[in-house]
Amino acid sequence: MKTIRLIAGNDIKRQFAQPFAWILLALVTILLAWQFLLLFEVYLELASKLNAADPRGASDSVALPVLRILSGLLLLIAPLATMQSLAGERRAHTLPLLLAAGVGNLRIVIGKFLGAFALVALIVLIAVCMPLSLEFGTTLDLGRLAAATLGLLLFSASLTAIGIACSAWTAHPALAAAAALIISSLLALIDMGARLQGVNNELINWMSLSTHLEPFFFGLIASVDIVYFLLVTMLALLFAARRLDSLRTRG
Image 1 (tube, rainbow, N blue to C red):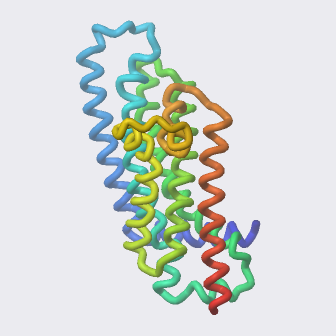
Image 2: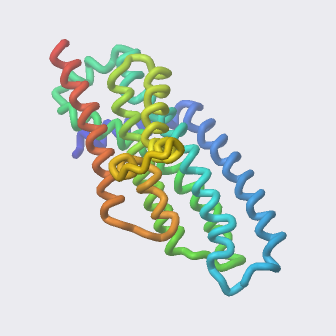
Image 3: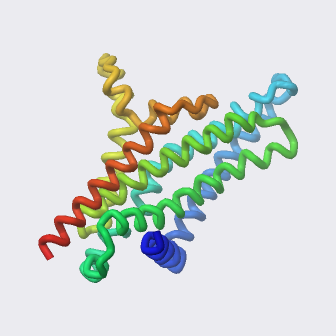
């Protein structure tokens, strides 16, 4: 665990020592804040038509739509946050030093995952704080907001793990980001594409990331959805560890 903490801590420090992480945080925050204010303005215009005693008013009109927008942005944010994790090490020729340090492949991968996930999770928490500010002037459905936050964190973990796996398979960060974006988008939209083609297959539906994220926005926390996200995360990290093992064997 100490080795994992050291790798994760080093990656976190390195990320925030460079302008990229701060620029990404600023751009995402500005975009979400703009969307939040637009939705809030619409909510105020319609407030007279809403039942003030109904906690779903602000939640359905402002809070959850902002988090839904974030879920789409995460498909791009996670690849950007992970593209340098292992691909950058290979590009800088520092990965052989890390592999030669006697650290297990899975420990390296988990450390890199936690280092990248810290940035992605921070963006999720910043986004959640925006609708939470409405609690001072209206009544939010905090249960649904908490469930949506949990779903977004699990969704983010899966996307981050996919990004780490793609970063392990190439020495080019841009290619790693592109591959992670394509794979994540495919998993997120596979169910939509199947339905547009008139295909209603339970397996395709179950494989879709969005299928398992959507219930959280309705306040439904099901073990099957949690297990799905954890399974995707673990499989992606195992693929990354397998890739490091082949790199270590080749020397």
